Length: 183
Image: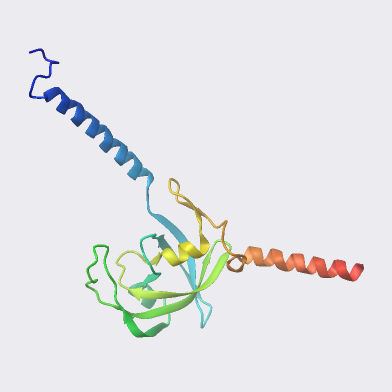
């Protein structure tokens, strides 16, 4: 039997499969290097005194709510609002979260670039993460995300969430009213 011969053992075929598998693993690693966490620098403003703080927020398309870390909320003096009924939290694997249910929310204004909105954010223990913006935020704003660079563009929002759009609309209305006076 030659070195390259196959015979019944199929050894060369296994080598080809192993080489192909190794190539597939490299491709998967390359893809995962491209996929990354996307973080936004947002400003959270307390509604009662209009004092704000800059925090990093993680965009998370597998989270069905928005969250702020309990320690972050306390450290920055956000007013906690007790929920009428606790909200149970489930982990990715479907088990109940060991830290218990959500019992408080924070209401605040959230600023990102030219966008502002009032949000109710659930308070829970997030560890090192300060804020998580989940599916409701992603659906409402439908941002354009460059997963390679982490750049987030707010190109498809409703005009109500954009301060810049509101200013442009007001400016257009003023011009229109002035034009009507001239005619």
